[in-house]
Image 1 (cartoon, rainbow, N blue to C red):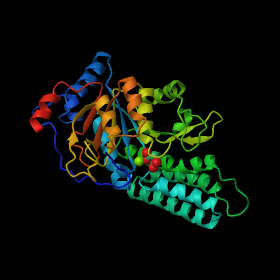
Image 2 (image 1 turned 90 degrees about the vertical axis):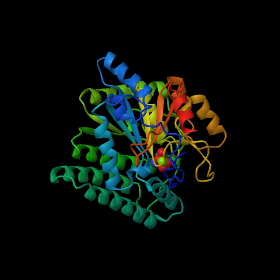
Image 3 (image 1 turned 45 degrees about the vertical axis):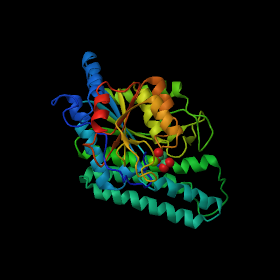
Image 4 (image 1 turned 180 degrees about the vertical axis):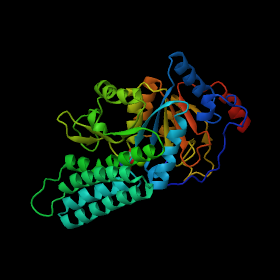
Length: 367
Ligand code: ASP
Ligand code: MG
């Protein structure tokens, strides 16, 4: 499917539910997932029965966060969804930022300290520029600016101009983690600007991992216990947690990362931590395709697939999701949606334990 790195969808939307086949108008689920129907309605019913709104985790990839306008657009999706659900957000770094942070680490390896420093200064500029473009009120702006400055100081501290420095995998992860730490701060500020109380949460506060730096394995059970304590009080206070994807911490507290493009996985972990009804992966393509639409012009967009079908697709080479998402989703029966941030009215793809009953008709209708 996706690529937050670059790839744009070249395939027309096909296989979408024709209007009228989905849930009845006026249903809260219908408003949330246009044309999506049964699943959202089930989540809604579960919420109503428990006296609570359903809980959704929205994960935004780097291309959905490339610049202030996109961040505000994504934040507006969260604001609008809050009419029908409780929300937690997981963010990637802004597009291109992780690559740049890793290239800073590489410059250190090569002893190019001045270059590393200049690259870091550029990243600080980039995030400050996004902050300016958010056009916050002056108090809020000053607060966020202080937070960005403090992150910037931490980053620069790892990049001394002189002296010896041990450049190991742990340092790569610590440097790489700054992208999500910056973007989570900006996203929380964008939500606040739209009137949504929000709080940035650095996932290394609860997501415990092995110490295999650059590809750490999460301890899901322990992270769930820790994560509930961190995230639940926020939700109960009506605050949207904005959680950093990608990063965790080893037992000794050092920052780790779950590997490249792993913030989908972080989204699934946060959904599991919170027993969320659904995870929505907001990306820059319309959903999951039968093949890579860039390479195969006849690739078809799928509206509704089971975990087993998604596995088969992934095995046949279609890029579906980060490899660890499906196993965790299948084990916890988490419904995962893949949707296009830039076409929020398109339905996207639903991946679940079974196909929604109505989808057979939809598939036939669209064939
Ligand atoms: N920012 C991280 C990366 O670029 C994680 C992600 O985007 O999923 O690898
Ligand atoms: Mg990504």
